[in-house]
Length: 141
Image 1: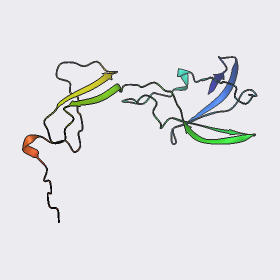
Image 2: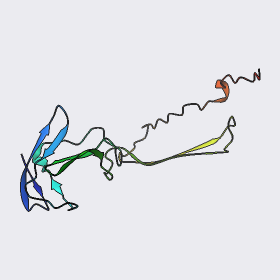
Image 3: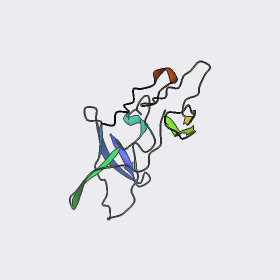
Image 4: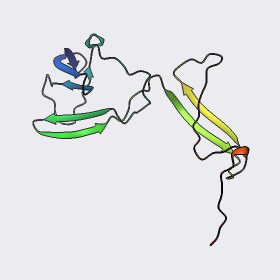
């Protein structure tokens, strides 16, 4: 399929591999070192966004270069928006005292709307409830 470079000025060839989930763009013009490039992949190419989504700045999104003047190993893309995921996640608790009951505050922003009865699950490894106190060894030998 065709895609464009530099704001739609240059048409170039692109290909998608379903097996490897890799998009390959063949340069349609000479580019100077450090020149900013934008490649636009049209929706008609049929590449679908992941379901249920991806997190902001997902390190699995990578870019590699194989140019006649040099190559670059896959490098994580520094800035990418989230899609169907949680943003601004955070956890706070008070008091800051191991083994004490604490108020737990969960902060997040969801890309999905919530309806009555929908749930949020928070995995809290190593936390425990009063009836579930872990065995603590006090043996000093």
